[in-house]
Image (cartoon, rainbow, N blue to C red; front, side):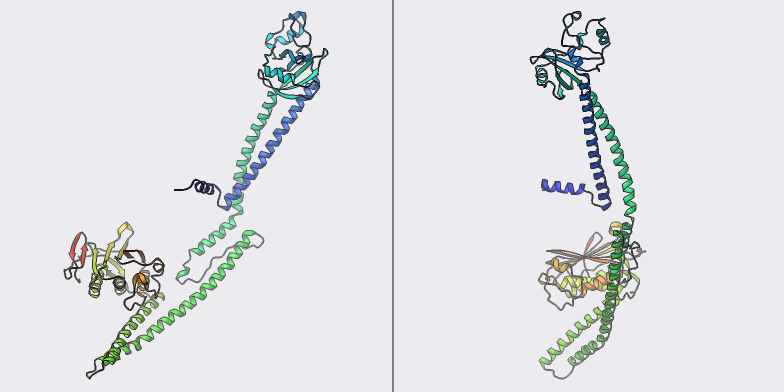
Length: 536
């Protein structure tokens, strides 16, 4: 179960740009966004402050004339204060307070009756009267006479900028102008700034992406050079590294990276050349030593066999020593032959090329393995048609024999060893040869090195015979020489070696796999039929 904190951290990491190009663009846009936000906030506050000052100046210029007209009622209006609306902007608020009590409150609504009322031709429009709540009255009473203007929200109207002055009769006259035009102007400015800033961000993002792409083009060439170097077959004897970065101007950051990479490639090329020279000398030494050792080893073995065939009496100790000399000479001869084969494969010498029937090879090698290890249970799983590949028959036979011998030597008696063949399964045009045993398996540390030379089994597969540690190395070398591969899969109770080889181009042959019964503990699976397995 994933913890919430870990999930949030993973989501945050995915949201953060990872490439240098994306980070530069994101940083540029972030800085521009902060700049636009700062400019927008500053201009909005400056405009609001300016407009509020204009309202305060306008209130000071009017001198409370509209509110003063409410100070004394006129007989023509029936005792009501009509208010002088001349030269007053629509929405102007006026109120009269006596002893902290609002006696009159009106607003210029901009109707056509206001000039007529001012001329005295019509009666006052009662719609100009404002209904104030108790809170509004308290807010008006709190205004200091002769003090600065304040912003007050009147529930019956809207937000107003109000200023109070002392009247002639000991009363207080309040005049106010609405803040709605000011707010509308500020909102229009904010809208315009949002549109302009959005266009600026998009334009800057596109232009910045193009500019950064052009600026980082030398870095792309550095990456391309590194990718071409990584694609070179440096592990197969290739020592030349012709790739170099063209941008090596030390005056730029990318140029310094390119120059450093070029120096590194030069050192790598020198190291590869020295390594290749050492490997060539080692291969030549192994090949020469193996070739030269074949004759004395054969001579030692021949003399030992000749001494054992002596017709006269030979002491038991001497016969035992001669037997051991012959056995060790045979073992040394096998090691010399294996080393010579590996040296030839390392040198890249071509193998024989012919059509090879892996089905026949599997049958013969399994029969030989059964004869060498009758205590194991041997099983064959073969398709109905012959499995053909192109290659060296002797070397491929050695691959199969080594895999079966490895399973026989490193597993206890009673272990089931299965050799399976499949032709082109999966549609990849490859032949798969798999040797699987039910032994104790291979330790992970050893499994990583099992195809190296002179690597022998540890406690997981105790060495009970004279293993040279070259069998699996030969399997990999021969498979690679045939443009194939070998893989290992192991766990306690199951170890599987899988060899993949290119299938033969013309596999149609009038040949059928047959089997005869010779051993009750071995079975051969041919297609969907199960028969006792014979030697061929």
